[in-house]
Length: 261
Length: 311
Ligand SMILES: Nc1ncnc2c1ncn2[C@@H]1O[C@H](COP(=O)(O)OP(=O)(O)OP(=O)(O)O)[C@@H](O)[C@H]1O
Ligand SMILES: [Mg+2]
Image (cartoon, rainbow over the protein chains, first blue to last red):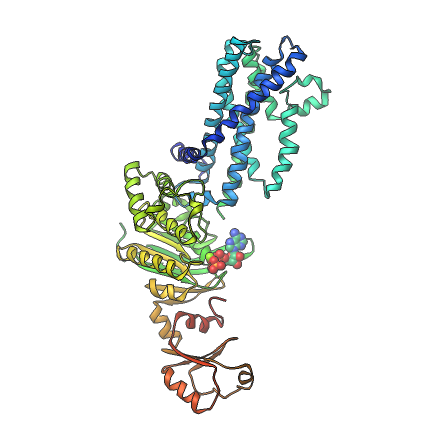
């Protein structure tokens, strides 16, 4: 079986999902508001009490963390729940596979969709953060490097959606989602350096955290929005790219096996 | 284009195994262009497994398969571009409307927008769903979903249409609507492959069919040939009370070519049912009811496998 997706065919999945969202467009706003609420509640609420973190205002520290988190959440909603239902309950993909479309076209198409959707959220979030910083303060975008935060976020969306796709293929029962959310996503969300620097943890715990993809997403985006860019960013990017590529290949193999019996 | 002598679909010793279980065991058949070809068999016979291999949805384990002159292993996308597939279980896109299902499906085949819209409207007309064009798929009845699935399978103007139990689970009226549409497709020259456990469906629609049982083909021919070869012209169906039935031994012998004792009735295979019924009367065997009918594929199946088709 050919494993290389075709961009033309993959874009069909994006078209399909656009049609679906024509009917349920309100849902699309949740992905936008969630990081914003966190920013208002934690960035400003908590930030007022915390003061500076590593020489920058707390809200400026948290904002890129929330940007990375919103990429992850978008990928989880789409790439995890929705795809699982299409895979196992609605049999949508079986129908699509009776056409010239192939499994990698579907998988890559779903990833493109998650990327597109994530980019819109990221652009909106960055704009709001910039605007709030300029008008009400404190400023949260501290450097011109932040221009790269948008492509950075799109890249993170791609990586997380590949991971979501891959995780989905391991889910057998709806119940498995609870386990994944509670034991994987939640700790990743809390401990990846989103809300506080990971140096708060003892060394062995820090090593463990450095395995988590979200941590690298957060650090990558934080370097860009704060301007504290160093060569370490290449390590974050390389690690995310590796995880994303492996996740996608594994996901495609497993989808192929469960769909083409 | 292949010459007319070349079969559209050609299977030789086609085999499908799931782990150690053999679902299709070395079957061979040819389907000619324009033919309506049936797979008749009970649950688990291997009909769907065979159809899925032809539809490139399931890899061939062993043997040879050619679909429109191409090999599913290497040319799946090109084959699928020319097939229409109606799977056993509807897999319509539940998240979009009836018409959008057709339009989106057209996109998967790279059919340009204006052509897709025209075909979608024609097909909705064809399957009598125009009024429901903007309805949610969920709101359709079983028969409507089936018709939509058929319309969807026709969006790419396929040369071969695979129909896996097109009418199972539908009421008689809905079944007749579908049969009538399939009949029209056949007249337009489409090649139809269909599976069914309904002998009347097979008799109505199929030029030629294979009877499958336990992963193997047990007979092949036109419905008439099969009936002539494996059954008598007529069948006398008798029902007895339990007491009479218990003491029946031997009292029917010599009355028919073959006698089948089913749990609920007794079948006498004979050239002339009315005459045989008279002979039953002269032997003074008390009956609850008697019915003379023509032989059907059901009888062929019973003869070949010792079991009824729909249990
Ligand atoms: N994915 C699978 N894994 C394991 N066994 C399978 C799989 N698909 C089918 N089978 C088995 O293969 C056999 C043939 O199944 P198939 O679906 O081809 O039969 P069928 O003739 O279509 O039956 P039905 O009339 O019930 O649809 C069955 O015993 C079934 O359990
Ligand atoms: Mg079947």
